[in-house]
Structure formats: C-alpha cells, structure tokens
Length: 152
Image (cartoon, rainbow, N blue to C red):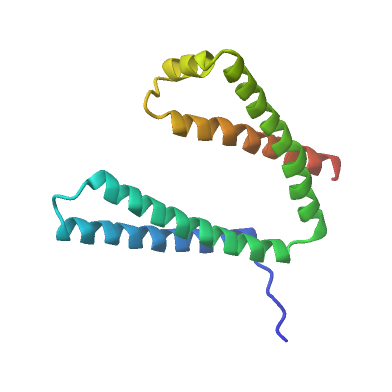
C-alpha cells in the first residue's frame, strides 16, 4: 500500500495551471479546426463552446487537485478553511441576500440603476455573478485572516 504524497500549495497551483493551459490550448485548437472547416460559422457560438470546454477542463483539474491537496493538509489548515467558508462565505451571502431584497422592493429599479452607473448594459448576467461571488470571496478572505490571527 503506497502512502499518498503531500502536495504543496505551489505544486498544486503549478499542476492546475499546467492542466488549464493544456485544456485551453485544446479548446483553441478545436476553435481553429471548426473555423477552418466552416469559415462562415458563427464565431461567437464557436468561441462560447470553446470557453465552456475550457471551463469544464479547468474546473475539473482544479477540483481533482483540490481534493488531493485537502487530503494532504493538517487539521489546522482544514479548520481555518472550514471556519472561513462558514462565517466569511455566510456574511458575503448575507450581502447578496440584502441586495436581492432591495431589488425586489424597488421592483428592479436599484439593479437597473447599478447597471446604468457601471455602464454594463447587456452584461447583467456577469454583473449578477460578480455580485453573488465577490462578497462571498471577500468574506472568506477576511474570515480566513481573522482565524489565523486568532490562532497564532
């Protein structure tokens, strides 16, 4: 029975970046082949498909190496990440909930005004993903730092 080797953060990052590069190059190759075969094809559709393929490959590689990394870290690191995701992610999600309630009570006027201020008309989905993701990641980062400061 072989013992699983601990994977450092740098090693994990290098492997994920390597697989991401390979996946992106594969998707780019697919785009080039499709555009050579059908030059009149809709480039937006082809690029969207390539982006989806790249995204799936990148996320798959990231998940595989994250699982391997998680199994190799000590209990303190696990506790820090779990605590940070619970408290920091929840605090960020509360912000998202507040934004949603404001949106409902203003019948969409508040988000529409935000779209106008940020000049992102036609990109509302990306704005929504950012509004949902960024507060959670910021909350996680702050909570992670607090956990480590309290336990040093």
